[in-house]
Length: 142
Image 1 (cartoon, one colour):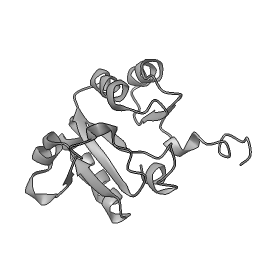
Image 2 (cartoon, rainbow, N blue to C red):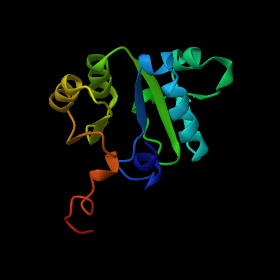
Image 3 (spheres, rainbow, N blue to C red):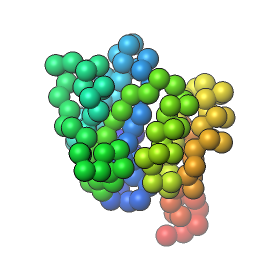
Image 4 (cartoon, rainbow, N blue to C red):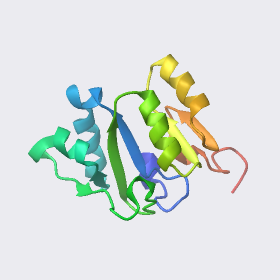
């Protein structure tokens, strides 16, 4: 997440939205990820559901009312939201995403296969930075 946001925050393949499976809040991993993101200077905008899950210990900015989850910040801000499963994540991405670059971070092979074939984006990755959708990183030069 940190590379995908901070390597070049204004790039079209920089991460703008991160969807967390609800289980990551139950076992505390979401809080650890958010702490690491914040430590690197990323400002987090959260849905109401996330704010409720995090409680009073973590303060997040609101999702922009005018653009919602379609916001492309182009700076060190990103939005986060919670989903129940990979199907909900794919629906969310296909509705609000830019169609440029998306990634799933998981070890669940069934979820990987569903995501890679079900997300309508030009580049879809598994366990990689979205910044890999770049000519230089593809080995095509600058």
